[in-house]
Structures are given as structure tokens and as C-alpha cells.
Length: 115
Image (cartoon, rainbow, N blue to C red; front, side, top):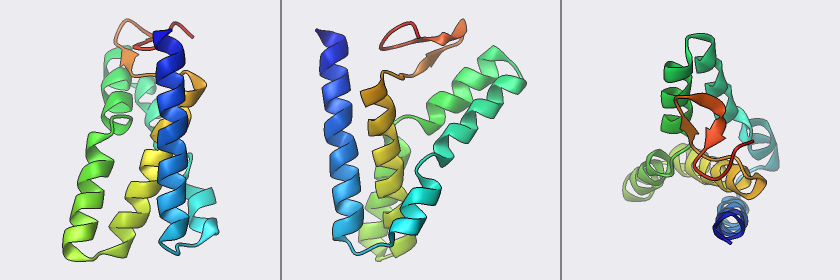
């Protein structure tokens, strides 16, 4: 049940981030090009499992994109809003697909499931 709930929550986050991005009038090309960009954090695993998990998790928590959105709204900086919405949509997409935050023991061990 928890797995399904997290995946459903991810779907809602994906929809919300995508909706807010396009409702703000931003271009689809930037969305398409940047949606998978946070997954480049997987390159941290080339250093070690510990570094990989820490880098991946830092990029796949909702805290940073929320801070970007806050700064974007407060200072009226469109690029921060664009990046924040795309980043949140990416995190939602990952959760919907069952990809969670990583444990340092193994890339396949996540807070949602074993991949």
C-alpha cells in the first residue's frame, strides 16, 4: 500500500510541476531538454556508492527545487521558476516510476523499494 501511495503522490507531483510550468507560459523545448537532467547525478556512482547515493539524493529531494521556486517568486526570476517546476516534475516522475532516494549500500536499495 505504501509503495502505491508514494507512486500516486509522484504522479500528482509530476502533474502539478508540469501544469505550473506550462501555465506560466514557458516553452516546451526547455522542458523536454531539462526534464531528465537531474539524472546526471547518477554519475556520482563513478566515484563510489557512498558519493553516488549522497549526490543522487541531494538532487532528488524536493527541498532544492522548492527553494528555487521561492526565490523565483520573491525576486521575479523566471529562470528559477522554470528550473524549479521542471525539477519538481522530474522528482514526481521518478517517484511515480518507483525510483526513490538511494541508500549507500547499493544503488538498487531505495526508500520505496528494491529495484
